[in-house]
Amino acid sequence: MGQLFDAVGDSGGGEYRPANPVGEKSDRVMSSGSHRESSLPRPRGNRISSDGRVGLEHYRDTPAFGLLQYAAEQLPDRDAVRYFDDVWSYRKLNAAAIQCAAMLQRLGVQPGDRVGILLPNVPEYIVACNGAWRAGAIAVAISPLMVADEVEKLLRQTGCRHVICLDLLSHLCAGDPSLLDQLLLVSIREQLPAYKQLGYLWMRHRQTGSWSMPSRPGSSWFWDEMAATENRWQPITIDPLRDPAYILPTGGTTGSPKAVTLSHTNLVANAWQQYKWTDESFGTETMMAILPFFHSYGLSTTMMAGAAMGATLVMHHRYNTRQVIRLIEKHRPSVMHAVPAMLVAMNERLRDHTADLSSIDWVISGGAPLSEEIAQEFAEHSGALVVEGYGLSEASPVTHVGHLFRAPRYGVIGLPLPETDCRIVANVPSSHSDKENDSGSEAVSLPDGEVGELIVRGPQVMLGYWQEPDATRETLIDGWLHTGDLAVRHEDGYYSIVGRKKDLIITSGYNVYPCEVEEAIRQCDFVQDVAVIGQPDSRRGEIVKAVVVLKPGCTWDETALDQHCCQTLSKHKRPRVFERCVGELPKNFLGKVVRRQLRDANTNVADANRAGTEDRENDDMENHEEEVKS
Image (cartoon, rainbow, N blue to C red; front, side, top):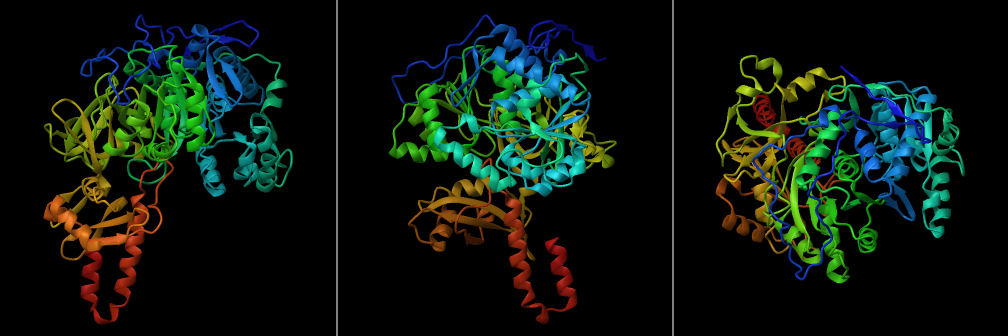
């Protein structure tokens, strides 16, 4: 049953008090930003059990906006957000969210309606999300990296008719005017330094053809609509466990585009799990909020977990290495979430330009594999404990994190978060229709040290894919989320990711994991980056192919690469094809290599090579080769 939450009167349009508030203050409040005498990382204690369950007493009863509500009650005057010269207290941020909910209700938003959010990391993102949730709406994450056709497809897919959008991005919503009832525009021009404001206006004109308001039916300024709202927010009924709160597009565990649907409980539970992982640090941490909120990683680890921890978020709307380092020196954050590409860029900058990053206690890296070399170098620059985490959008997204109170361990994704069950399984059925007698609970669990698919279960696991029941059944089997990632569990309970099931290379019957080959090749002095894929082969099924990026100033030496692999890899793991990549490997914005693009390019080259010999091959041979390739 849904729970009706009563408003208690205040000038902000009503406060929202869950029956069981999230974030009850711990007796053990951890200090942060301590002075260090050494540049090397050191553990901050050993106060958390990695193998015992930690009760999450309240997450099932709390709506997604309950985190911000509770922080505002407990820490009303604490800085919640710092963005340029703007400082938002928790009281101010929560009051704005309440007003946003009232505004959306005035504009006709009903419980269950979808409200798109097309914003970078600005305070309005937090206001919009919490306002939509208070109105009973479902927030839809729209990436600024999308093109107009992709945005239109997402709006149609989700039935989203209201969008809160950065004015510079409004051209992405300029398609079919009948799609949207309301386009609420946010500008960050006034927050920028004076010398950048004219450039902002010019960019707005270039993108939208307007110096002021983009000319689109239903467009209005977000803050004008907020000011014009005189009605109070009306309490609504929410079932946190079952009601969707957030929809975000993803490739899915099978690689095809889908829309992950997360409940209020999913979001709150994952934030609570991370709060517990810090030994219940509340009201003491300052976080860098540089991961985009439109991605589940940034949303959960900074916006949601930050509220659960009563942390101060230092926000910037776009990652810039020099600017981020300046912000760290100015605001002295204790926690930073990042992707490896960010740490690589910061390491490169810090080699030549020293900076005081000693306030950082924890760096949690995710989104892509983190090498020991990158982690250790950043630890030397900052004195921080650098650990790796793991997750996927279908799990809100975090399932594993390195221990925050022990010496770092590299090459692993960490330990399962509280209330997260994990198994490494073999012989996993490929679809629900095949497995009436072979369900996820009956999949064969493998012993420690053996590679299999990682499946997880916990309160953070999604409701499913939006309006795709078949895809949901293939991924969620008896409550277990089948990640599609190949992993291994070590004797001490830590997990390592070996690769994606779809990236596994099978050559002459042997399994080859690309990340293992890549790690070996990266040890070459002249290799800057590498990606390994399988190339179709008529004799072996597949052969190993390495696409290599050289370090600046180095020359291509395939013989040296081959000799290095002969010394470091078993015969079946050695690349039989090396290809030089001029420029950078194709990567997504998290810095993860998009192997699909390499495989597609590889297929095109293979097709072109075959075309020149088709005249010399008979039909039977052609058919045979196509069967092998497929």
